[in-house]
Length: 392
Image 1: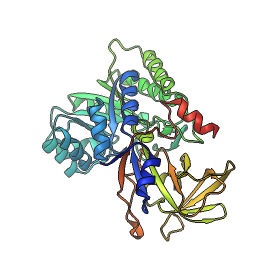
Image 2 (image 1 turned 30 degrees about the vertical axis):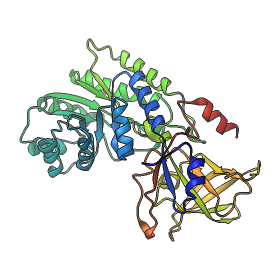
Image 3 (image 1 turned 120 degrees about the vertical axis):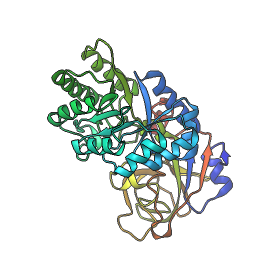
Image 4 (image 1 turned 90 degrees about the horizontal axis):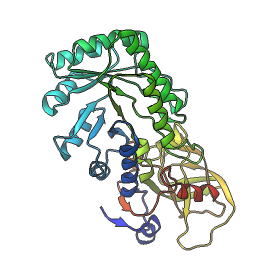
C-alpha cells in the first residue's frame, strides 16, 4: 500500500479522478491501545466494521487477538492471519451449514443465540458438542443510540431466563450479552443493560462465566459529540460493582466504530455545483452510505491545493454520481463558499463501515486505497485536533 505524509500530499501528487480512501494506521493503534488499557475486560474487535486486511493487520499488531464475527467469511479472513486468533460467532441467527463449518473447520466454540430454535440448531449442527461457550443475547433499550438494533436481535428478559437455563445445561461455559445500539450517545445505556443482566442472574441464580456488553461505543461527528470514552468505562465499572459478585465473570466488549472510525477518510471530487448542492464522485452506493440513510454528518474540509479559499462557510447538500435520486446526503456539510467544480473534499470518520458498504451500482466503484500519516479531522483521542475543527 502506497503511503503519503498527508491527504494534501496525496491529492497534490495523484490528482485522482476517482474517489480515494485513506487509512491512518496510527489512529487505529491509539484507539486500540486505549481500549486495551482502559476497558475492564477483553476486547473483541467487530470485524464487520472494517475488514480491510491492512486495518485488521494493524489491529492484530496492536495486541487485539479476539474477534466478533458475523459470518463464516469473516472467520476465514481472520484465520488467514493466524489460526490461533479467537473468533466468537455473535450473530444470533446462523444457518446450520455455517454453524457446522465454523465449529468443525475453524474451531469456533463461541456462539450467540436469542431463541430456543437457534440453540437447537447450534447443538444439532455441532453433534451436541460438549465444549461450547453459549451466549444468550438479551434485548435492552437502544434509546440513546443513533442506529437502533433492538428490533432485530435479543430475547426479552422473560424469554432469556429460560434460554439461559437451557444454555447452562448444554454448554461448557455460558454467557449473557446485550447491545445498546450503534453510536450510543450516553453511558447510562450500559448501566441499564448491566442492570438487566443482573436481574436475570438474580432470578435464575446462575452466575455466567461471561458478560458481554457488546458494542455501540461512539465516535465523534460534527453534530454528535459524546462524553469521553473514559466516562463510558467508568459507568460500566460502577454498574458491574453493583452486581456484587464473589468472583467477577469475564467481561467482554465488541467495539468497532470507536476503534476504526477516525482511521479512515474518503477524498471526493466535485463534478458540479448547483447553488448549495454539490454533485460529487462518491455517494450512498459507495463509501458514504451512512451519510444518506441514517444521515450521519461527516466532518468535511476543502483541500485547497494552494489556492485562496473563502473564510465564509456555507451549508451544502451532497449528491452522489449514480442516476438514483436516493444517492443523496443531506448533511449539512460546512465548506468554504467559493468551492467549485474539480475541487477536492476530504470527508472524515469513514473508517467505520465506509469500505464495507461499497457497491458497483451504475458502474461507479473505486478501490483506490492509500495510507496517510497525518491526523484525522476529528478525534475523541486527540482533543486538540477536534477543537481546531470545531473552531473552524
